[in-house]
Image 1 (cartoon, rainbow, N blue to C red):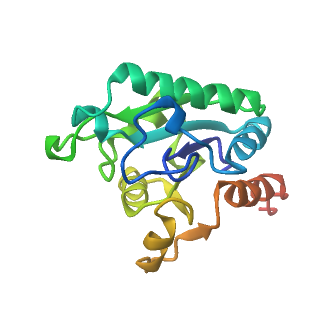
Image 2 (cartoon, rainbow, N blue to C red):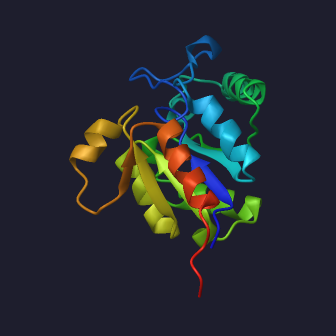
Length: 186
């Protein structure tokens, strides 16, 4: 089946991650090539959405209003690069809340798939951490890892043959080649 949806983690995949969280609009900085990758995927007809844990909200470190401003900046940067997001799905809960939406639980991915009207076998998750991969697995969606953000550390612990790419740009190139290659005859 042709890929219809791409669900991306935010911090470490689209933008530079921080151990101290992204708490202000000016702390959100795209990883080189990530915005153009989203634009290329958008132009290829793939619906791109973000699925991100944002526990700084639940910890009282970040207001929902500031998070919305950060997401507005991200959307504007993607639009300026020629791309589009079909949605931003986030878990605002702290880990101790034990909610169903915080990755590695599958709830956030399931919510995105439902709202986007995308089947699990037509979706792909790209993340930089074990929790992204695990959430995708639990939701029944294939996942790829990027080496940006926490990706290099995560790659060192992989034992399951997960596809690994240097960054979102190289993963997008592979996905676009996959889309543009002729399907095998039955």
